[in-house]
Image (cartoon, rainbow, N blue to C red):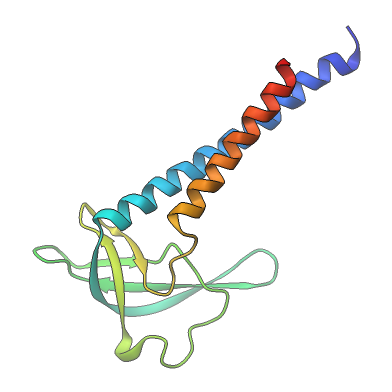
Length: 143
């Protein structure tokens, strides 16, 4: 058995596992987005601040932190999972208020209007493409 015959399956399985892990991550993210957007409720929230973070390449990311009280619930303080690459300007949050989509079953899961990130469909398509890559790599190894 030659060196190539040993390395090819190992590389193929490694690439497949890597693509599969990314695909599972994207699929889970798509499910969360679909769930939030299908059962979520809009509420007005108070903007408590904006957290600045480094993107690792010298750029900045800005995440709004909000507070709201859902009907019949306790006050929730949550940070947007989505960011913008520029700081919010004057008038971005009139009266320090913003609309927030929250999950009634887990109110800390939110989307801030204007900070929505990738859409659920785009995320689902990314997951499908990654799983397609896994299928392609594995089919090339088998056939």
